Length: 96
Image 1 (tube, rainbow, N blue to C red):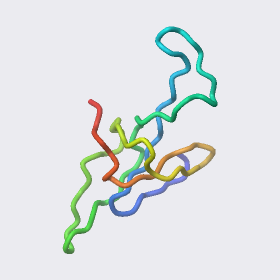
Image 2 (tube, rainbow, N blue to C red):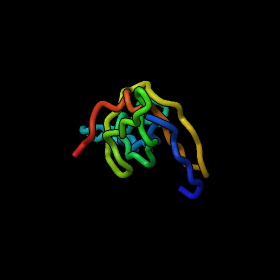
Image 3 (tube, rainbow, N blue to C red):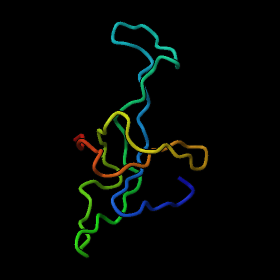
C-alpha cells in the first residue's frame, strides 16, 4: 500500500481474500455469481476505542487474518487496490 492511511479510533482496514474460482466439484463460478468473501487480512488498525477518557486498544493487529460479518464496512479504493474499512465490532474472530 503506497498511500499511508491510519484508521481512526476503533476502525480497521482489511484486504479481502480472493473468492474461490471453482466449487469443490470443479464447476467454474462466473464473476457475477461470486459472493464477496468474509475473510481478510488486516492492513491497518486505529489506536482504539475511547471510554471515559481511556483508550481501549483493539484485539487485532496488522497482518492478522480475520472473519467478519457479511454486509459490513465501507469499501474504499487506495492506489488501485480495494479495501474494506470497518469498525472493530463487526469482526467475528481471528483465524489462527
